[in-house]
Length: 179
Image 1: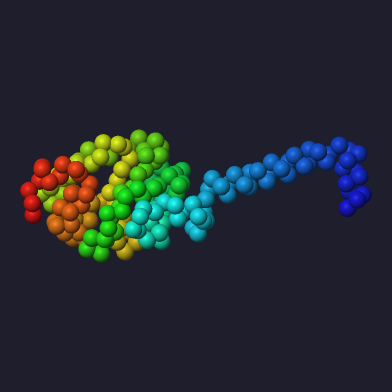
Image 2: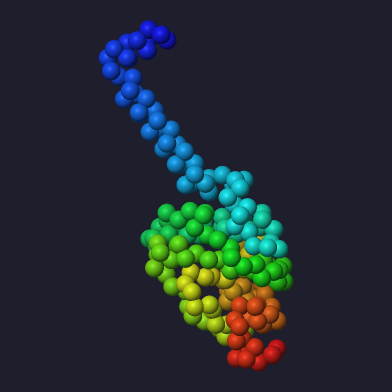
């Protein structure tokens, strides 16, 4: 080993070799930090869970949402990461489904998609918040659905939609009749 070091030092190869090794080490650290969605048990994932929600369910929802994004290569969402998907609100369990608000503003920057300002479900109109990148997701049996689809598939009831409307839209009760 000492002979190798002497030869490398005399030929002025040691310093460039150390620089290359340091650069490789920095790339490895960068890869681990910025591609943390490869590590499902990292502390980063636990942070993205609203109060009252099971962290494992939140992680499953985020991963499934990521899979959906990555399955659409022409949408500009193929490069999104798990850290780009955040559950900002947990509405609870309705008829066996977990209902959450996903803030995906970073993903909107990739795709340019803008969610609709309101959604009509079960005879009610729910006005969505004016800030971009918010999607309401129903999670059941490891699959994701939007509110409208979940209702039409019979996963949530008209009463569930009304209750969710009260939580999502501050003017919902004024604009919609009671069930």
